[in-house]
Image 1 (cartoon, rainbow, N blue to C red):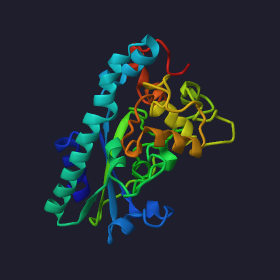
Image 2: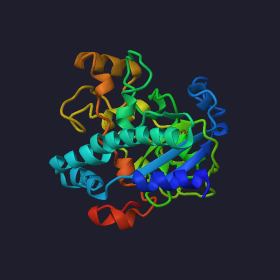
Image 3: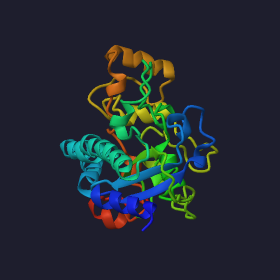
Length: 298
């Protein structure tokens, strides 16, 4: 068994990861300076990326909230599918995987911030806008989603998530940069997201942050996404922090200043996630279809 095979097996079995892959550092040559593997870890040769599927029982509470109006059920989603438990577990296991690599292979391993909690442990600045204001504004030091795609674990979907063959976008990823030279994967030759034929994520998005397929725009409007995902109006959260579903940067800054200086970096980003819950990619019908009155293809 090669070192790559052994490492993948140990990560899958010991840390209960659903999938494991290896990306070569050259896959990140086009990333901005300071966010390439060797910028973060001199001598880096490989990026180990791993993912764990989200719990179906917690995921289905998105439907209970938005289809049945049972908002209290959504607490399970926030605790066990989006924020607390899975993120803390992933951060802990990223640390343990790094320790395992260093102890077993005498290589250097750098654990990377991941998940919602990882957003709060990134580049130390005092931002006027939250780093959770959509994928385009998250200032994490490394693109873990890109690593998952480079390792062959999935593809980038129209909704901005990594779409995997079996679980669609319902997987959380972590990664470790290492000086260990491993056998690397390559982007999978698959087509899992076909927005022109599907478009569910765009239709389900309550603030139209995800553009309609064929509109000519392939980027998510981060500010619109934030209104729903961070619950900035009474429709999505507890009160109207902002009055529009399409705020400018200046409107967001003004609204968040009224809430308090420490609010931006501790803002929950799990009040919506409709694009994740309803995406029909993977075995959606088998795993979640019975819990929703709306087909993922509608």
